[in-house]
Structure formats: structure tokens, C-alpha cells
Image (tube, rainbow, N blue to C red; front, side):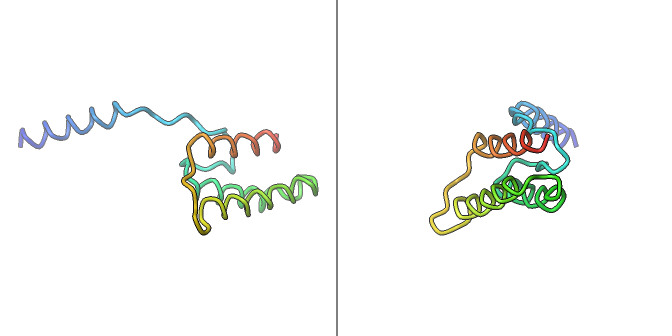
Length: 98
């Protein structure tokens, strides 16, 4: 029993020691987890919820960006999305929607 407690304590310390990811822009549509799928899904949510409030050019830009990201991160020869890229996309659209 003591070994289990010791293991739990060590695992708890190890997980707490990991660096927390930098926060994503705080918006209702932003992803909870910063992943390529989370960002694309969140941008689709933004499109559904806020398209009427965005200008036509912004909606077209948002749809173009979604298509580009899908091809880049999920298409043939897909690239790995870095946290920096993901954060930049979310931050850019958070600025647009303010």
C-alpha cells in the first residue's frame, strides 16, 4: 500500500513539474486544447456563430484559412502544426472578432 502511495506521489510531482502551455486567447469559440484539430474546429464554430457579425471579406478570409489549414495539417503530405502556428492563428482571429 505504501508503494502505491509513493508511486502516486512521484507521478503527481512529475506531472506538476511539466511546463504548462501558454494560454490561448480567451474567446468563447477558442479551442480548449491547442491542437490542429481543435483550432480548425474552433474556426468552424466561429464561422457558424459569428458569420453574421463579420464582414463579407472576413467570412471569405475565414473560410479560406480553414481550407488552407485543413490541407496543410490534414491533407496529403500533411505537416505537423507547431504550438506557435496554432497560437498565432487563434490570436489573429481573436483580434478580428473583437
